[in-house]
Length: 216
Image (cartoon, rainbow, N blue to C red; front, side, top):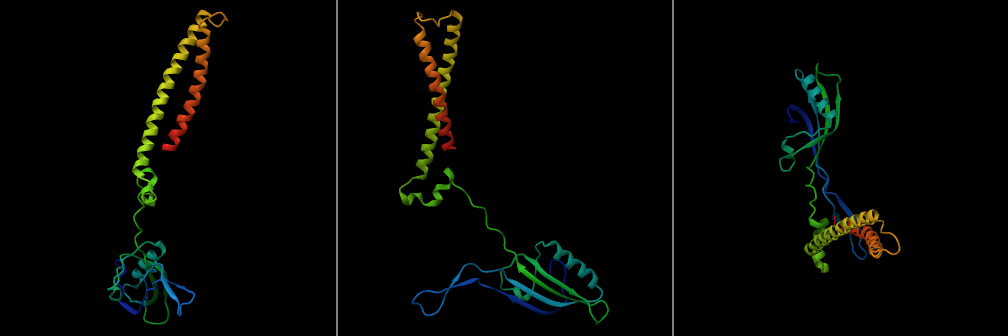
């Protein structure tokens, strides 16, 4: 059976398994080492006939399945001991020759289509725990806590900078209002220091942004 299509006149069934061994030559070793890198998909080859009466409908179904390239279910005695859930029609050949009216010969090659493995899961702080940092003396949890502390400190610094800049704007407004920018004004040194603080605030803001970039 291929899905809902019953193949009644199968003449030949061949099942093939390739373990995927790679031959490795080892100096001083008599013989060849065979290293298994992963089994290839099970393959099944069928040849037979579609019988009169249902041959046309069965041929249409098989052609549509082969053209779609979608996974199919396959059941046969030859695959009883194999754990096969889904297969794909890798090759399909149909032939109509001299013989009983309406009889159609076919050859089908099926290949196992295994399910994909689950997606990789990332742990906190970029998955550092998956790289065995504990063996190197690093504690991924501690690194994550450090990153959080840096982010908190950066936020505190930015709050202080925002407060200082607000004070700068208020004092600047007072200086403009009272024309305090002359040499004899005792507030002028304070205005100059405030201007320096404003420049410092820009630098601190850039530093805080860089810290945020490092900590995510």
